[in-house]
Image 1 (cartoon, rainbow over the protein chains, first blue to last red):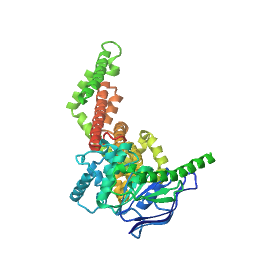
Image 2 (tube, each protein chain N blue to C red):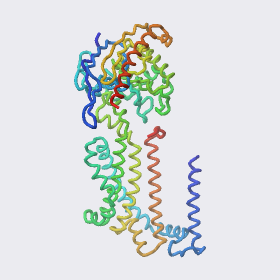
Image 3 (cartoon, each protein chain N blue to C red):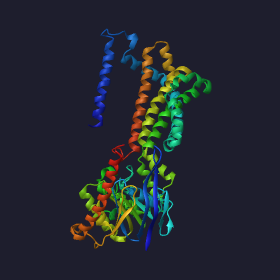
Image 4 (cartoon, rainbow over the protein chains, first blue to last red):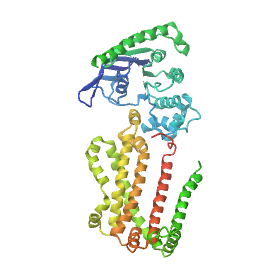
Length: 265
Length: 254
């Protein structure tokens, strides 16, 4: 069943010195309910912008996003965003941060919020850290808070903007295993932005490879690897083949970008 | 290092200073009429306290100070928030505010007397004028320096502008706001003294002016000491308030 539909998305940003920057252009994508889609692309290709458009934080200059057939005009309770920089409020405890989205709905009593928060603290494995402040946590734990905060509002769609980019390599691997474990429980629709090819293949049902700026769909790759997936799957021949293929696609784009810069210089 | 240890080390310098000051006259460095002596000042202080002169003065001065200061907070914080939040307003008002901020308010004393009358009114006005700008400007800076990603987080959860204000802008800008309040206290105290010296017949400032004019150095220093002590106590109170407000984020890098 079709869940998210992006039609001919085009995003431009006005430049301080005048003129416009074309960040995303003619971007089409259809995401099915319960599908895990990763979007991978060279840096600066507009992938984060694209996610903000789906969340409703940024308006596209033209084109539309539909969620369940409804036009997106702003943020909504059916979507929740996980940030690369975690975006936790430093003066709030783990509990307080996870409850933020629920508070902002202005619907539940603080007791009910507390119960729900506790549930999600357990889900992401942060028991015992309820009263800790973000600065007392490691990067991986902070992002667990970020994920729990998004899950707590029980969205139908999880939008993840390079959520593991600020973590070290080992933590990153563990977090992607954890993410799949959590995702397997209720299979929400996920749009996951990354610049890590490994991550994009490991997590996804489909990988969208973006071109360098202006960001367009370069190719969409079906990942047929069986689930649930352990880290060992990264050695499977199919995984290696997909990784190679995506790398080739991205290399073209990165080269184009670099050459383009040299031409101008 | 523990707090009492730090206090002790700091106290050492104060003590040494008092000893030197006390010894300066018997050692023949200066004449007592010029700088008085700590023991004399202490005696004068006790006398002024016993006669009630200090309390009467303090009562008047503090009344003026608090009224002016509360007004400064009530005006400075909301205006600072709005200017910090809306770029157009800050472009519009920054130059004007900076000009008034840096204007020597004391020089406006005669005008303030004309507007608000001799005594209490002028004192409140000077305190307000002195304190409101550091509070306003620092609040605006605090709002501007709030990490935009926090605002995005609240927005992405469907938060309104009011939610952004309550959940992010206000708590996020507390540290600079407190800096503004601390600076405001200093300016406000200065305002009280100057205003009362020039345009009042009561209050600590008036007494300072009186003793200064009649060259009663010992009493003058005792009164100035009262003002210093006030400043010290206020600064300490605000530091405590700061710790209390920012509980849990004291160690966050801002």
